[in-house]
Picture 1 (cartoon, one colour):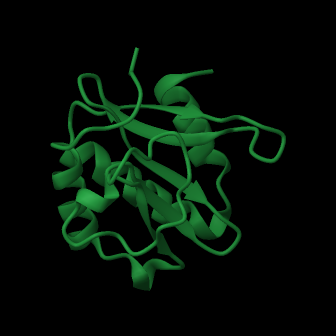
Picture 2 (spheres, rainbow, N blue to C red; picture 1 turned 180 degrees about the vertical axis):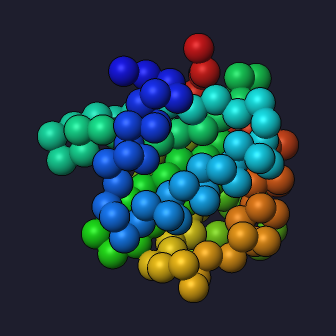
Length: 135
């Protein structure tokens, strides 16, 4: 399974305590970037449904989402180019290039969901270079 269906399967199976946040973030991404495409990547035994990635065909993958044990992570591939930079730096991966590094924001519950700030980061991210190719 690939594309939107794989992301929807991930959303459907996310931890119940993250479900409403994941749906809000997914909807916000699609609202801010109407031409966004999505799929899941990096399927493995510990994450059989993979990790949702969102991107723009001529830019590459620009946003990813993780459901951790106690939080939801929203990663921005060109995070060090965002203003302000998202707070979490632990996003190792092939998308880090030179001075441009991915960064993430972690949200533990609804009270930490800053829609205005996430919208601002998404608006900036849609104009920045992404990672990889979207086919």
